[in-house]
Amino acid sequence: MNGGGSNVYRWVAALCWIAVAVEGFDVVVLGAVLPSLLRYEPWGLTAAAAGLITSLTLLGMMVGSLTIGTVTDVIGRRKTILICVTAFSLFTALCAVAPSPEVFGALRFLAGLGLGGVLPTAIALVAEYARRDRGSASVTNLMTGYHVGAVLTALLAIPIIPAFGWRAMFVAGALPALVIIPLMLRKLPESLSFLLAKGRTAEAEELAGRLGVRLEPEAAREVEREERREDAGPLRTIFSGGYLPGTLAMFVASFMGLLLVYGLNSWLPEIMRGAGYPLGAALTFLLILNVGAIAGLIVAGPVADRVGSRVSCVAWFALATVFLFLLSVRLPLPVTYLIVAVTGFWVFSSQVLVYALVGKYYPTTGRATAMGWVAGIGRVGSICGPLMGGFLVGAGLALPWGFYAFALAGLIGAIAIAVVPASPVYETNRAPLRSGATGG
Image 1 (cartoon, rainbow, N blue to C red):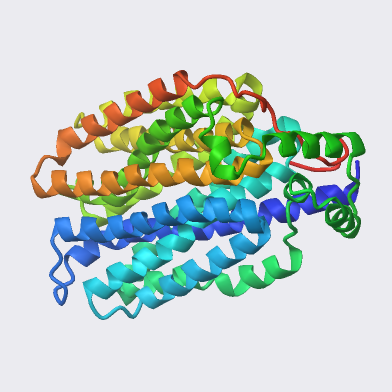
Image 2: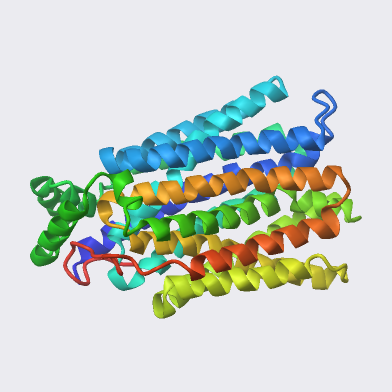
């Protein structure tokens, strides 16, 4: 094994993981502070207004995903992720001093622009450095960072909010940028696959030399030939006749998956508090949901690499449907905790398996664009989830109708992935590194 290559992969995976963890913290923090915001007398927020603020964040993420995914297929992975992490950290810090709900909502929208660009860029970069037989696992392992960030949000919220108020949570969400940005500047390389796909072979060879890895000549030439043949422009590629049916089906699945992710993360504490649980227990549900999500991601990647991303994704969405329906039934608290954990196991991995499928489905020159568009269209679902939750909570219908609605979303997601056709060309990722040179 080429030790240098293994070290490169570890740095890429670690730095992208941390970026996604910080993104997870900054997204889920709003769900953690929502009960406090609704009771913050100077602002006098209603449930509907709080849902609108949540949706502004997600609207920014949608715009960021749709635009920045394409940008990274033009300017590269490294520059894009640096810009995104810097932007969302800055605007998250400013949320801590927002003087009004209007300014707060605007800052959340601007933070969302950067947040939306992190995920497609990080997934593309990690997938392009991962070993070919670990493509799905590399994506699901990366996404454990999101849920570790979410768990840290819940853990920190329990002591911080009562002691220092909700504003302190946004300071905590911005501080990691002081470490991660300098590390990225020093240790994060550009994607060799991206450089080859753009015909920048000399630059790829020079970078490979500095990184201590060896390009596999035949694989590198094959990547370059195939990418040039497929490169009609990133947008045209993903909407071309061969890819279009799969693209549309994955749009639907991503919409449903992100509706579940953000609907539950935003409103589960308030739904459970409305069901009679105290604030501490309601926040514990959020914690348990995301602990279950981490366990699901650890299992989902290896399963997908063995049986296929599409088959695994259908199964995960279907099982999420079953357990979301069970949450509508009032059960003893320990049993409810268990069902919430198992629900998190299936729900969050379903969405990530959609991303894993995207990573294998498209050519390098359109991969980040496809990831951005699938995530971006999914953000429409992420906007609808909190809005739906706010409506149901405000109308007093969150139990049981909220969980019925979430279960229906899971069922539609399963059906959408089931009808995705085979990729026209790219059944697996092809890495230009010598076999065994990368980890993952």
